[in-house]
Image (cartoon, rainbow, N blue to C red):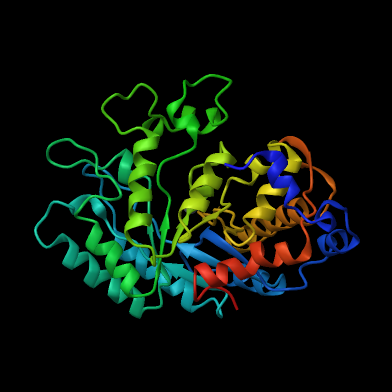
Length: 353
Ligand SMILES: [Zn+2]
């Protein structure tokens, strides 16, 4: 890992100067088409799509299969309504499919899963999402946890690669999932409400390092499989750790979904240096979820997120990010274009207008 001084030394002087273009761009509703690479909309929402068009935004709608144990899920209806959302969005919404990994020990699991994914690709899915239940919740008959590089999953990764689609991987969690639940835990609000994902003291479960090492073995095994790691690839707590992975795996990029607050609270120069160095590997994303909201309410909520995030990345304004005072990063126009558009177009072919 290069030292901070070394990283800063690589930055052209122009990058370190506040420049008027970034500030001016920040006030505008977007003078280029931007992309939010991680959303959960999942149903036709005309007012929301109209708002995206007006603000020059597109999104990627990710289907998730969050089940473990014998929980019920109607995955087919989720896939169907997400496809309807994408088809009714006037091109504003691309979508990614998923699969239920719980049957990984059943005969014919890989063939069946691949056949269903192919149908999704025929329906326009541009990628496949896998979720943290792989590594943290799904177990085989022996009680062992399913890991991302389990032999049962390899033919699926291979099929995604062969189809030229992207694997979108939310694996593991912030470090807080493996830390005591106290006020030093940066994720206290989430894990106090979601104890099932709080792994501290769970000696039977894989460590975070083991889960991410299994993901990294997939990256190494399929160097031409594009993988986008959700939530800064779960290395949000340590940009140095993330940097080492981005250096080691050229087929790996990350989205910023629900983790921009980590950039907002880290040392500002360090955040800017990181975004400069990895400007081709970071995809802007929110994790915006429509949920039960009306499309009108949803449109306002999503626009508010996009406006705040744009101010954070594009201007040097003092602002408050999730209750914490900070200052915008004032990234340059070329970096903004990559993070807010070009990287998504390259790592997730088919997203954006
Ligand atoms: Zn998400």
